[in-house]
Amino acid sequence: MKIQWQRHLYIAGYGLLALSISGCAVLDFFKSKGAQPSAGSDQELLSRADASIARKKHDEGRTHLQRLINQFPESELVPTARLYLGRSYFNERKYEEARAEYQRFLELFPQHERVDEARYYIGLSYVRQMEKTDRDQAFAKKAVAEFQALTNEFRDSQYAPDARAKIAQCRRQLADKELYIGKFYFNRGSYGAAIKRFETILKEYPGFEYEDQALYYLGESLWELEQKTAAKTTFERLISQFPDSDMALLGAKRIGVTLVQNPAKRKPAPGLFSTALATVKDTFSELKDSVMDSSIWQGLAP
Image (cartoon, rainbow, N blue to C red; front, side, top):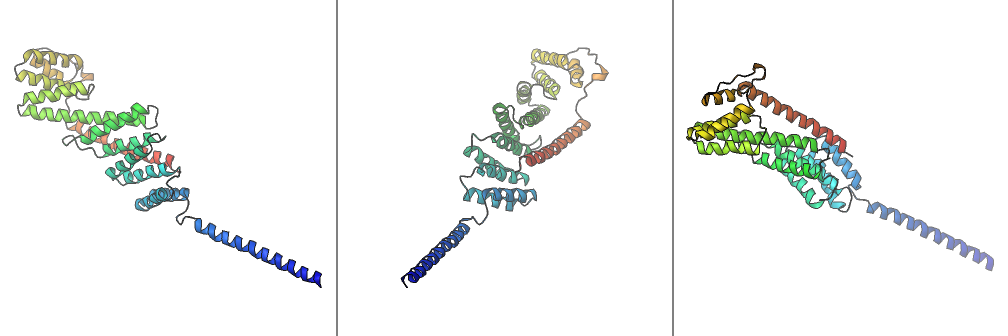
């Protein structure tokens, strides 16, 4: 009788132990379920954001990115999420918002391996907002500053070659602006103001496409102000450096010099055709930028 009673006691004990173990397992199951973030892991959020941005659903993509940043502030993917935020705005041509995000990235992660990318897109956002030659060129100046910072700090960056090309493009536009203003003053007889502009071109933008024009109008401005010696020196420099330019012919005529040009090398003064060609070049440059942006983005996507 005693043995039977002990057997029942053992069975009851094992039953209670089994219930306890299964109860803990069920409890752990629900606890683990409750610990899962409703929006998924940091990697899942980044992947969702990338997919949304690829479908041009930028607001949706940014929502996923903000959730990643807020829910996983210590995640190693936060810097990438910051870059994606900037890129989503850039793709929508919201350049001020894009710059703000890239600048935030630089402030938070100054030593990150993709700092060059952030600098590149800050500069490129300024390029995309550059005005025509007859407008303010503040964006062109800022673009040059950003691209120079990039090329100085990251000479071997994948973005460096295009950054250097953009510097040349921006400097050409800045020189164009100086020439435009210089001619404006010249045509109105404000020769002193015109001289400052032409001298700026020669000093700050050596090798400028229309440097021969800057020399010619500088010489003419000096001539009009009765500074004949300085004017003659300027015209002689023009003839020496650009002997086959139409501007050189005009300069030679002014100082009474006979100039024989090589017809095959003759450089005509810019007219309607050259203006149209410059427009085509700028359009092609923008198209190339778009293609490059797309290829870089595809290469960086997770």
